[in-house]
Amino acid sequence: MTFEGQTTLKKIYCGSITRNTGGGVSTPLQLPRTGILARLHVLITGSVSGTLSAPNALGMASIINRCRVTAQGGQDMFNVSGPGYHYLYRPFVDVGGDPINSQSAYAAVTATTYNISMILPFQVNRRDQVGLFMLQNEQTLVTVNLDWLADASVATGATVTGTAKVYAEVFTVPASAKDWPDLSYVHQVLEDQLTVSGSGIVSYEWPRGNIYLRLLHGLGFAQSGSDGWSTFQVKRNESDVISDFQDTALADSQYGLDHFGLARKAGTFYWSGIDESGLGAYGMARDTIDSRRLTNIKSFVNATGAGTLYSLRDTLLDLKQG
Amino acid sequence: MKDSDFYGGASPVHPGSGMGIEVPAETNAGLNPGKRPAHFWLILVGLLVLARVFYEAAGE
Image 1 (cartoon, rainbow over the protein chains, first blue to last red):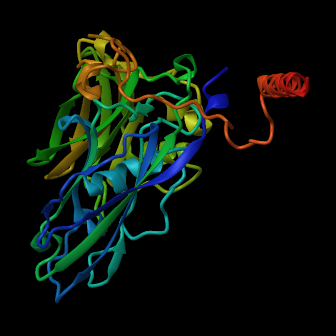
Image 2: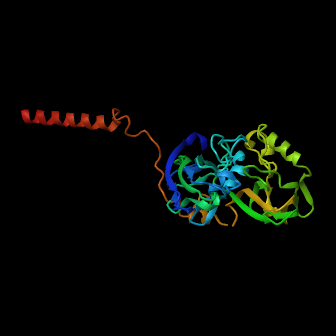
Image 3: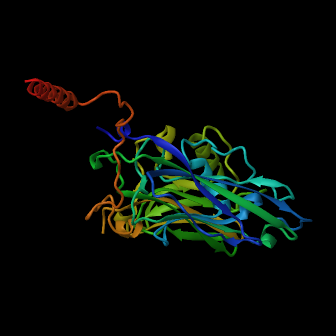
């Protein structure tokens, strides 16, 4: 028997998270201890009202300061900002199209309703088993935690409301443990932000320890953004250049190839070890980087001015070690 | 980072004392009550034979 023959994929409603007045961290929502977690749909809607000025340059996506999915109260499996998710990660959720094109994360902040929903994948794609997480365990606690940006940071004079409804797609657990899927990797998607003080080369050292699927960068993206970078290199062990973008036009070409001809958002650029393997990257891990085998690996970005360098790390953590 | 950091103890990678929640096997038991097990008929016939024996004995 195989896993596929012994399981059913279900969509279950887990509950909702309401934004506190003024913003801040909401009460965590615990996921039910049922099934094997494949992905979460976090449906975030609400409204902005008031007489607005100085709207956040990142648009409606800025309303979520941080979205985290955490195991045992502290181990992040997902930790991204709203802008980081929508401008950088969203096109990589499955086969490369935009899965949530019917919402308003890219819209400017105005006094209206918004929809900035997210799909958070744990299973790395919809075919391969890697990244599935067992929820059906008494000792395991997984929570969804939302940190909402303060009203005044969304726009001066704004009053923001928001509700997030959380749905989980879970596989039923096969009765026999030998039919369980491969549960030996945790899919960790974590985001760093680095302040860039001015033009010039800025280096970002990739934290070692995990297997890198993708490294998504952003510098200069915004609701009306532009490329805040001119060149981008990825260098292994201080000397092995594996990715050399001397021109932002290469990033356009790469994005079109990986995303069915969709246009790249200005200010975004990336290295990928799986999208280069073709449609959906199903079953192929040819170019992933096991950072445990390296001395170091770094991104070198030539910034054109001051800004914030986003680095969103899409990785697998091998649970068999340690 | 250990698997127990994510799973809080027993994990799919190192089950140890086993995962915490029993997984009921999905079966159709109870959905087709019309079919009776074989020993039901055995017992019924046995009781009928016994009843016949007592009837015959009472008649003598």
